[in-house]
Image 1: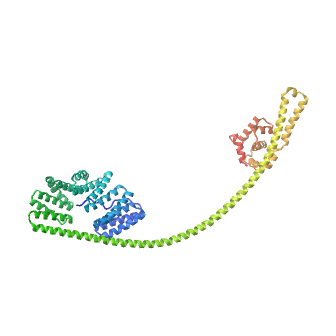
Image 2: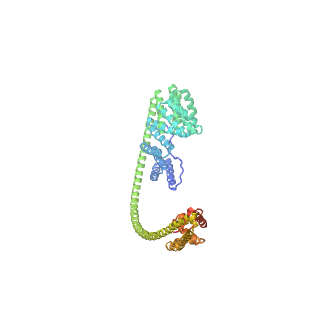
Amino acid sequence: MKLFIFFFLIPITLVQTPRIENYDKIQIAIREQQKGDYSKSLELLIAAKEEAEQNQWYKELFLALNNIGANYYLLTDYGEALENYLVAYEVASNHLDSQNEMVVLNNVGILFYDEDKLTDAEAYFLKAFEIANQLNTTEKKAAYAINLALLYNKMGALAKSKYYLEMAMPLLKKSPTKRLQAQFAQGEYLYLKGEYKQAKKYLRELIPQLRTVSLYDQAAYSYLFLSKIYQEEQNEEKAKYYIALASSNHNSLEAQMDVYQQASSLAQNRNNYKTALRYRDSIFLVKDSMYTVKSNNLFEANRVKFSIKKYENEMIQKEKEGLLAERIYTVILISTSILLLVLLWAWRSSVIKMKQKKIIADRNQKIKMLELKQELDAKNRKLTVKALSISSRNTLLQEVGDFIKKDPMLATKPDFKQLLSKLNQLIKKETNSHDFLVHFEETNHSFLTSLRKKHPNLNSNDIRFLSYLYMDLSIKEIAVLLHITPDACRKRKERIAKKMNLDKTAKLYPYLTSLM
């Protein structure tokens, strides 16, 4: 009994030229298979399979394996077919989607069905149907349901057959050929159920439609069922009539053998043993023909295997030659790489030496600069100490003068007036006699040069004030040195900062230290 087999092409979208060529090779192989040139088909498919394996093109690998299995199935080499189907299933389940998986599951189920391993066939058909049901693919779901119905008819599980037929029928409105297949399964179900009246009407109406779409085996079995029904009803004439209609040149050998078996049974019931023996002989002839076909197919399968083995040996030899060339190339590549590494090492060593020399020179320069800075810092400390010493003495003298000024009795006495005048002259003399800028410029020439260059609008008093700031003297200390009040000193600082375009006086000291 023919089931719905899906072992050909599944459309895919490709973008890379090598993959397109591989895909085209599979298409050519399928056309060769359809023409019956299984050797050529398998040769192309195996080449496509190896290329797909190397490049991990799983879609093409699945197609190649599935169609290799189809070739062996057509050659009735079910062992090889099953082996390739199972590998295709592994590829589909690990790398592709469920749609590919269910196709190969159905094909495996058909192998077991043809070998009358019905329990195994049931397991694979059910799994394929379950996936089709989950994906809600109407065509596949209906086809797999029909396969299950035919399987359950053969197993005698008629309740299950009815369940899947009722499921399939509504899905086949747009598929007339598949619907006829389902209707045939329905007719077989009615016959097996013993509902002869309904089965006869159903099958008679169905047969012309089956013949129209070339479903000859289904038509032959429909006639066979009618013959058996009438035989059960002891209507020998109609039983004989329908078995005569069942015989046809279009029948498969299996169907024709069943027809001869029924014809022999009818002749024997009429005690026409001569006719019965003649049909028995016809059965043996059909069996011989089937054996011959299977033998030829097996011979062709073995021949194909031999051709494939030869092809694989040639590929291995080419691969060895390729490996030799690859080894030579590898040696050249390694030698070149070593030479480049040596040159790279020499260049790197030269660069490292140059960097080391530069680092040493930079460090020496930094040491010289540090020594210079330490020398400058030492001189500036001396200047600071001297300036602070003058500042302290002037502060003390100023405090003495202020004390005299605050006491009316002392301030009016001529001796104290004369003392106060001398104190003021001494403070002014010490302040003016110490030309701070002369000594400061000797020590901080670069600072003053940079300051004057960036701010040419500063006068000597401004520069003196900034020099004190640069030495990190406080406002109070600077005020004493300049003989002004701390408040006046702060205002001068604000004025000079504004003159230098600095928005805040707090930025003045960091700015001055950056000029060094």
